[in-house]
Image (cartoon, rainbow, N blue to C red; front, side, top):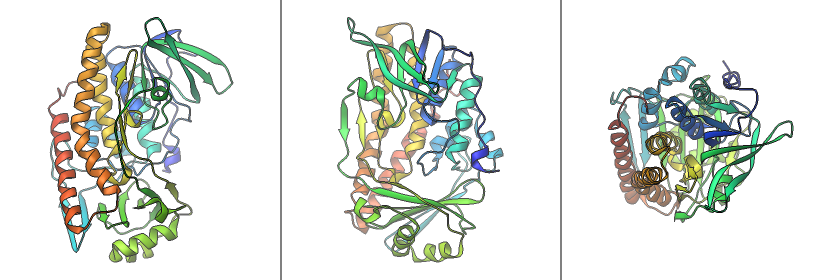
Length: 401
């Protein structure tokens, strides 16, 4: 089955918009759809809007680490990902200096394999679950502005435009921005940048068929990082990351050149596989941690926290923060003082789990390290990921309520 055939339009609760909701979520990709799903399961009246089509593709390297897979398992969605033919990743390898370290994925916290579903599958699966939970899920719907109560200096809803040009207003006690690095919610509220990255790498990637691989493969060479990520339909996402000037416009030749420098054995395997007809390129963007909430609004996913994609960990963090934010909103809903308290706790926990990852990945993105330093950076990365998994595993396994 082609990834383009996975999505079907998630159920919608009514033909027209309600005038008010408990929560409006802007963005129905992984972070936004997951947040909306959890809030709707708890009984909140949720509208989630997405400007793109249901199940459309987006820039992504797809890889889910243990924390992300654990979330899908907790939410009852992992079976759908597996049944769609997403390959189980039982081994991951790290190559740097003259070493290659192979790690077998051991069963833990209900996870015995990793997965890297295409975003056409993952986003559609979570959005459908949000609709089935009772959220009003709307695609082809753009947020054009935020509604405010200037007297209370508070966000009170959103202004929407549908594909047919109609304009609507939806009021809510809380507006959640899950709309990426150019978030209209973050920009409209002037959310402060708490921490700013100093470096950035560019990434170019494509999907090879018939590539011999045993799982995730990560290669770390100065200005020549690369990765292999098996995904749906017998395809493997192969990426190369380096300074933006080295990546340029990207493309197959750039990927092959960087991999040949970083891992000649992988380059030989790549030469025997069927190359893609095209590639996609990310030109780079400095990472940041933004203020996570304010009066009447909150941020999740890349809208609130973005780090360089060389880590391939952004999607896992997006699912993590969806659950942490949803739990905070549910615990404080209906009481402004309690809501502020719980959202403060969410931001503090998000930052505690993120800062070591953020700083480590930012240093890797500099492409200024040597072999001895990258070994230490990878140890730091592994430790931070383990802390994240332990925190998620300690949450009550029952559904958020």
